[in-house]
Length: 79
Image (tube, rainbow, N blue to C red):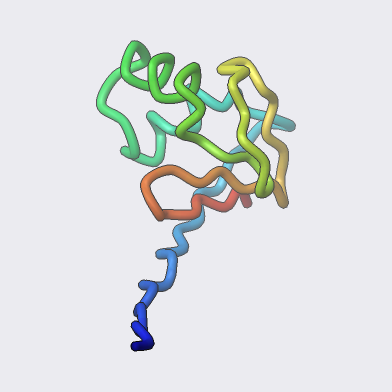
């Protein structure tokens, strides 16, 4: 017996930054992906966030224009 699985597409959101870079934890807060900086710290350290397709556990990771962060099946693009 074959089982067909439907995978939902990831939602894409973009946020514009006015600086050269933004820290990953601050970017997640800015996008309303997390409620607080403490929440951002926990989800990043637990390996629940991907940056440019790879798991990232550095909350101070610098994101620049063109980078993307993924959390809970939503992709947040830096513009």
